[in-house]
Amino acid sequence: MTNKSFRDLYNAMSPQAREEVEAEVQQALAEMPIQEFRQARKLSQEEFANILQIKQASERF
Image 1 (tube, rainbow, N blue to C red):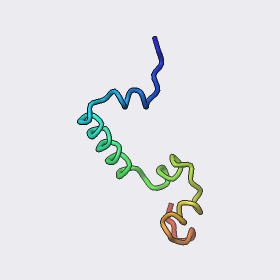
Image 2: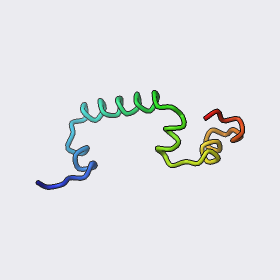
Image 3: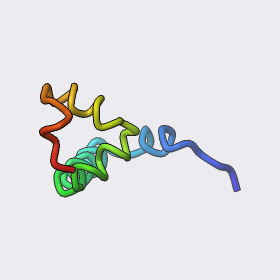
C-alpha cells in the first residue's frame, strides 16, 4: 500500500468534492470553541488577542 499525502488526495478530488470539504471545514471551525481553535492553531492567548486586536485580559477563555 502506497502512502499518499493529503495534498495528493485533495488534488485528486473533483472541484465539487473540494467545495463540499471546504464547507464542512468552515462549519466545524465555526462550531469549535475558541480555546480549542486557539490551541489547534498553536496560538498563545497573547497571540490570539493580537490577531483579534483586543487586550489579553478581555479574553474569556
